Image 1 (tube, rainbow, N blue to C red):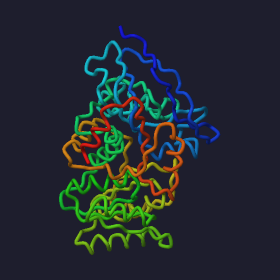
Image 2 (image 1 turned 180 degrees about the vertical axis):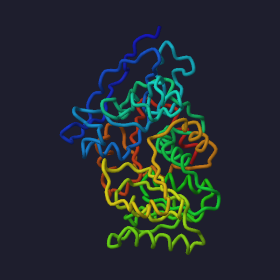
Image 3 (image 1 turned 120 degrees about the vertical axis):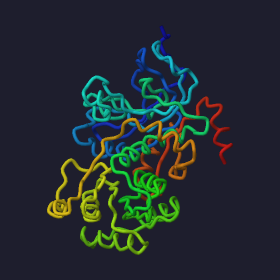
Image 4 (image 1 turned 90 degrees about the vertical axis):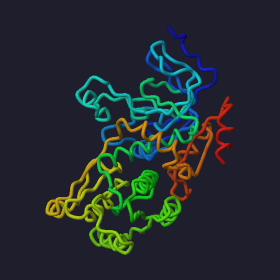
Length: 376
């Protein structure tokens, strides 16, 4: 039987609450069980959902009704293992797959554990998030990091897994053109995955010129197209398709919508060729209007969606480990854990120039600085 875990250091955590405030405060008590590990979180990414819980107080039916610890994109080192854990040891470097399903329902038994209605997902009310020093998590959903990957790489595996699940459901073929709607973190990861999949030409859209320039540098050969607010969705879709055709591409079979914004979803619906599809990766409003129903119907365009991911983490790790993808440039800002409030503020500020913000905790860290230096 494992000894109870006693945190050797204070355990600060990033909170929001029902009054839309953010703060650093002590973590809720840790009560790890025999199947759990305690992870010293070394790197946490900030997701747009963290900002949404702060600003809006909810995502769909998931509501912040009390002080709530945020975070679900993280990696760290194991500092305690439960008595039933045999495949992991203290000192192992791991990435945290944040969703822990029930493993008993039909969805879990069918392999679609991302659709489990009883999933305990880090950072989603009422489940405590990972933006804290010490985090309790089921050992079954911790993935060992190979030597080639840093903790920062590990914190990028969650958004990469989102995109891999989308591409698994809606794969693009070698030599096919595609459009990525949105040059935020998920859109940029999708752009990189499309490039690695052999799609060409690649067009990426956004309202922000700066993000488009970043996208073109991040994925050489990508063509940035600025969304023009004065154009209607169908007209804007036509302008985007002109850029695809000017680059030698045919009308896309698959379009990836990575914003969840109604106007972008509607524009995306006009872009696929007949019998094509729109893969909607972005998370949007609970109810969306103005979809061009007759166009979608007559063209037999499929609207497809994802809910997180399943079984994608091993592949995500391999893609980074073997250099198929390099997502490091996405991390534009880094803050220590003690400045997590400033980190969330910077991530929410479009004028900050941030793409992906990471919160790091190097307290007591010995080997990672050497690992990072060796990669330069």
